Amino acid sequence: MTFPMANNKFWLPVTVLLLRVLASRGQVVSNADSTAVLQTTNKLFAVFKQPTQQQFDALAADRINCSLCADQDAQAGSRIELPYMVSRVRFFREYLQRLRGNTHVKRAYLMREVRMFHQNPETLVVLVATWLPGEYQGSEGAQLELDFTKKDHKYLFSGISTIP
Image (tube, rainbow, N blue to C red; front, top):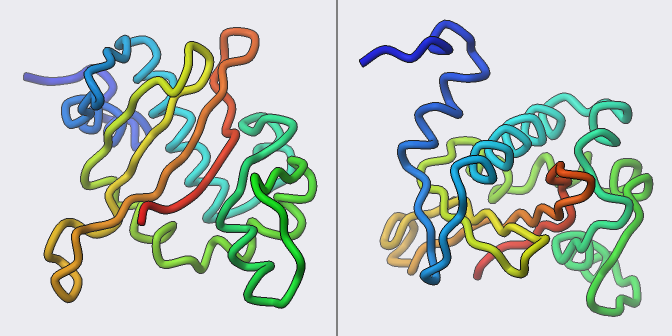
């Protein structure tokens, strides 16, 4: 079977991932939603690798729930309150550079296993396996959670955290 988009570097990973996406928690994610969110996820990872404000602004919601940002601030001794909501501008200026070096973020680029479910009708959660069970010193595995909120028929990046 051949895919008409197979010659395009961007579409090939999305096409392959569509074959591997699993719905979890018994909730069905439509093909249109999974396609849209996977495309946005690939674009977001590209921006994480080579950040530009304009591209990030097109992909992100006005406010981002960032537990990884809270973790970084807590390590620096800053006082934090949860949920840790930061503006899109602050996320780009203060946290994106630091998150690029995060092990979970780097391993998420491989997108070995992707699960998604609706947190609510407007929010889709994408879980990207960063460590498979037993892969790292007998661990149960880990995932990077990316949240996407639908606004004007478009899914925007609205949160990031790790599990566990």
